Length: 210
Image (cartoon, rainbow, N blue to C red; front, side, top):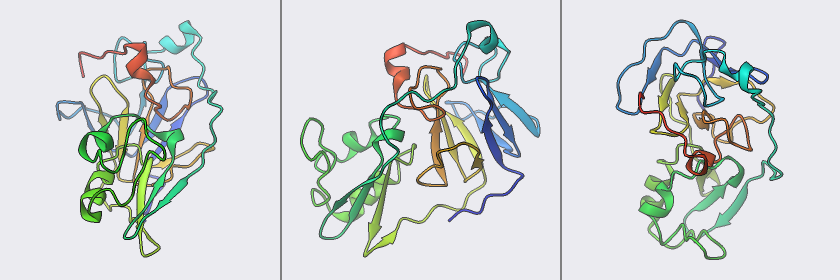
């Protein structure tokens, strides 16, 4: 697992922005570096005029950072001959990498929606490792997927969430299932805050600047 330190911490402030400490790399959806300080504040109400940074608008619009999703933060296992796929639907950001890349395994509108034997295990692993939210992970012979050891980084997905890698500590009451990656809401509409739940698609969230 990635070792987290006090120097790399993300904390969702109550009904306010994400307070970020010690994350030196921040990039927009074009891969361009965004200049930050040792401590900075990222908008998560979706209404800042200075995205990705907070400008205090959350106070004017009465933003609530409360989690209102009724779904439990639970992981379901799909056991196959070569691979076991672990799925935590409640933190899925619905980027669609899994269904687009491996439709034989991740099957929309079918039950069960995951068939761990639908493709060769190596292809399935490559697809799972693309999952930005950490909703999907895997085990081989009961050995769980290992987190990648990389420097903490925040990437802004186009008109979507913050994609966090490198394992900065997330200070909230529901720790990520995969410690080296997770997606955090920045549109303000997620019902599973601080995580993205794909609500940016329905809310029409846009950020042309980033």
